[in-house]
Image 1 (tube, helix red, strand yellow):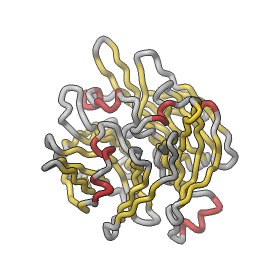
Image 2 (cartoon, helix red, strand yellow):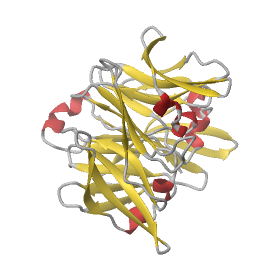
Image 3 (cartoon, helix red, strand yellow):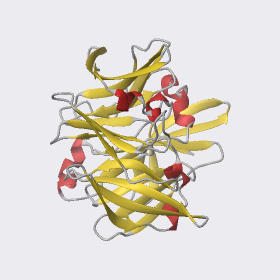
Length: 335
């Protein structure tokens, strides 16, 4: 099984990027054959369907049980540091690996016994944010914090309102669907269920300038689920929509307009997407926009494959990853 998909571009490849070539995809790969976990960072070529080991990682990565999950892990690429950073939701730490020299760094977050973190994200100015949840006296309280990786300092940005407090995803050990919207200067997350009403699916937004919160209720019924919140380089927002009807699953790609709260069907997807049971999960899924191909890529952690859909013509492709009996993948990032 594979864990962690990340897409990046090295300095030497900047010229190739300008020529509209494929960017680099990275994933975490976990091997657990001999009781002890061994996690490595690999690079995957979409052109050749081949993987290359970049680094065999150390004990902090090996002991990160988040990599064993079928749910998403929150990972980001930090451009100026040329690092991949992932959130370990088991011990609430940030794990960093430098793509230039393989140096690993672990930073323990400031989590009390009744606190947890989720939703690792990075802004276009390279500021790192997380949601922090506190459970006390039978009450959920969620806040937005900023984390300085140079000084290992956490700063409270906003105490968030009831819509965030009731977001069941923020209490999960699996990663959540979350994006940064540059022109609106907002953090947006997909809420696949409330504590008080698990049938409610919504987009929750918080503005970094003034703390304004906005909730969009999505068009969901008992047989419909959403997953995989994605933003393109032109700031269009996409989601996967899965419908269960007549004993069959039907997946589609939809675009969501934040200004008008409207949804537009882009493509009805084929069988590879229909059979991706990750879309039905309350956990987030690994999904990114690839600007070099104008496509959306998602990692199916159930059968260890990469699924791609072109926004230009709807063409779909599937890459079966090189997974053994005691292996898995997770984490998808694109620069």
